[in-house]
Image 1: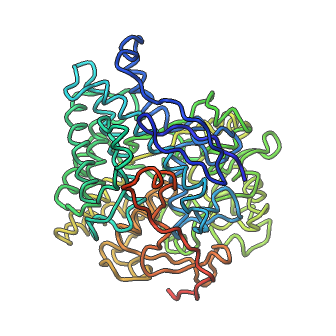
Image 2 (image 1 turned 90 degrees about the horizontal axis):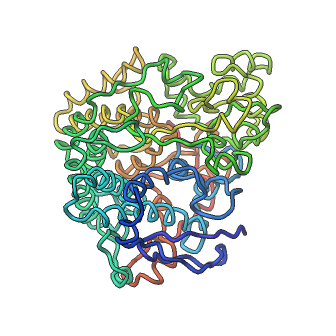
Length: 555
């Protein structure tokens, strides 16, 4: 198997893997002394900038630019959501471990090391800044400390939702991950248990409280660093998980100030669709033209290669989605629950185009793209279809970008949009007074579908662990944020199962599984060397792939 040179993750040391799938190496210190930082001009600000600039652009996991998914934070959107039902890999590819959900995600394998390397290196960056800032930051260090607290809270929020076998609302004592702060010592790392949900979310809120205070007067230049509105958004997310409905509603409403929801023209724009920040983006990240992820391996180890279909096969010929036949497409049932009047339907190719002649298919594809022949040919490589192909995430740079992946893949990717805040506000309000929540939900939904009727989608969900109201919210979130990394978090939060086996499903054979509750494979394993060297750290069971497809579900 591919040998991967892993980088050090935590303060001083965080337990590097050496398994049959991973090449062992001698770690170097990741600590920076106060004197070293003080003696370097502008060092503190450089450390602050590294918190967000390290989210994408480099091969932070391994030393091999050919590892297609080693492109940073957005890769985790796909890892997580492919475990559910709304995304389909049309062919066995780089993401198969997460879609197939078997022992390859176990603690002895490289895929298990990936999140540990990334997330704890990002946390280390935050801890370095907070160590340099001190418990009472000087005026010139307050903003940096606020950014560090906000981002650390976001990283632990992700980890808690990935690793806890039960969400906060179901079991406050369920274990998440070990907490490592700027004050954690080497000796403490060896006996650092997984924090319970209760302790973890208390820690997350405390970080966000400090971030809210420290960023009160911060005016950012762009959406690539968090400001106080993002802190409000993170608090809304946290309180939603904690089922603290009053605070979730409060902070979701505060977070909306200064933003507007995407219009239909923005959502479906062929030039700037989901590649350029707009009035709805509260926070995002961006690739740069000189990033290793763009320059090396023909740009194929990047988000754009995975999610952007419009790259000229003649002038470029690159891109896993555009030219190699390894697309990630929308689940057929989710697509077919979208009414014709919902403009978000325009971001995914209609499955009906697979039932007509090639000439009719090419003509139909003109509704989605200026290059229908490219999209048709991309679908024929392995998928042998076009239904469900996503045209949500566009290449950037117009025709020049579509003809040159080194331009086209230099995209921005959203991390938080104001639409999420409107739906959190609606859900939180409705859990206190359902009629208020329905009114807010209906206002949101009609901005996407003028013919929206409340309750129409609720019967499509396979189990009844939640009310019609929460089912309607869930459906909106699934459609609105497809590809943005929230789907499996909601499955666990709402205690939902998944449905991949049904009539006319487009899920791959031997991967068509139905469950009535969140599947065990959504509880990520901790890498083996963490549990070997951290004597207080437990682990989740190794995922076991179902032995056969499920019977077809009848909607």
